[in-house]
Length: 126
Image (cartoon, one colour):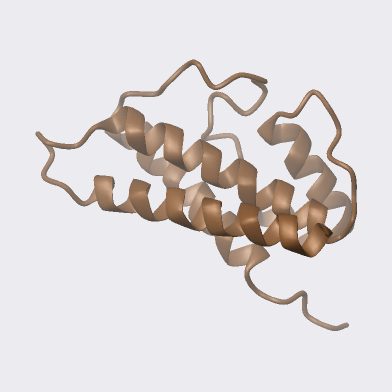
């Protein structure tokens, strides 16, 4: 069951990330930054939660991006390279606030893309 649920989370995360990327490449006057913000945040959350669920690790509540990342770091050192400092909402348990500055949402999108790269590649054997 963990694999099925994580597959759903990964698929949702990929769709959200694609939507954020599509919004980012629009002309500057047409970009809706809160869409990039929200889609990036949800994508990142789904990638991290999916990673944990795939490994049958319960997600600790309250769920925040920072807490999910700490759980992921505890089982896979590759997550040490993921820096959430650019994400202002990393400690929030709700998704009611949005960043509206282009530079800020671009940084959040970049973190979500890095998380995708980590979870979608196999853990190297040592």
